[in-house]
Length: 415
Image (tube, rainbow, N blue to C red; front, side, top):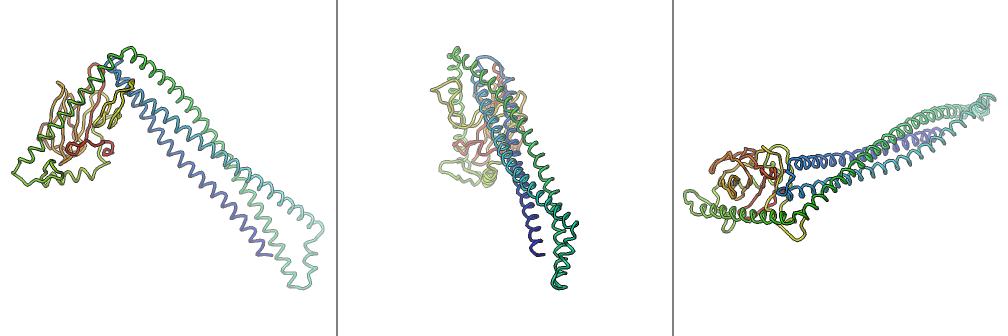
């Protein structure tokens, strides 16, 4: 009998512990998922604020129309992502509340049953005390050994009642804690629903603003087409200039016989031993390079083909990334290397090429340059001041990475 009682008590303790542990594990997993979503949403909201900061600084005129449309489209996408993350957070909380409700129901049912058993045991005890049943139970034994066993049984039964009382108190605390957790989850859900409502209102304002811009596009179609044509022509001129300068450097490396050189590709730039080591170091830092500017910034144009906002049949090519920032921001070298070119395509607007062996980083749209051709630069060294268009008020750095003449996606290389 003694083993059976202690087995029963141990089983109750074990099951209750498992329930508490399972609940704690679920809460931890839920909290971890919520923390991840909240961190991602904060990042998105910071991006939205950064875009708004750039929009506030852009002039409200025809020359800035393309830039405003582009930023507004990115802001709306970011806002929708923020709302989606909020929906995910709310769904997690709903699942959590549903699970806690089920657990709470199970706990309360078990608690009520245990209370009933405990009350019955107390009633039996009172009956036993009135009629001296316990002593009769002991004295009616067939022999002394059986009397001792019956006494032990009664002690163990009393201990079982004591353990039952303890378990009832523990379950009361578990139920209380579950109710506190559920109330906290409901409050968190209410807060998130409020946030979602604010985000929806902001989205409506942004979409309304975008619609007004599109209306301007319809009225200023000719001006927009001129901007697109100018942008396309400028990009082609810039690309031809860069390719010619790179070709000249490759040709010069082949003519240089003062030191041993070797090309990694057919017809490519012939590197010295030091340049080869520099190229290897650059390649090893893929995905770890710092961004090429100081202060606050936002990628406003990604690498590859794109369709300008407000158009339906026009496609342009971006050989790098365009990074919007604020007036007075400096461009930084993303890796150590040598300045091989400082040139202009438009009067008063400069570009810098830094060579890292067979790799090149190109910094375009500078109003002022702090380095000269032949300078050795270090990682994060300032190269020049980023140009701010006096008409549109747009401050933008165009940044490219190339391996020989082949353009690479900078986002694959930047940290």
